[in-house]
Image (cartoon, rainbow, N blue to C red):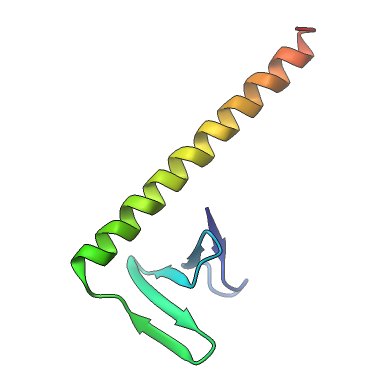
Amino acid sequence: MFERTSPGAPRSERLAGSPVVRRGGQWWLVTGAGSILATDPTFTGELDRFASAMAAADREIARIRSERTTARANGQ
């Protein structure tokens, strides 16, 4: 879901390959020309919900993969 934008910036994470980054709990829109802080509560709320949904999907995928690995190891 999140990917670090650079090795030296562990608190800066890009949301699912988008031009949106969360830095220090704030959402930023990032382009080659610079960054702008996202302050609209409706927009940032949607970003929060999307990030939560992506995290839940990632956890579910990891759970399913784990179950399949366990099943294969048990010969099922």
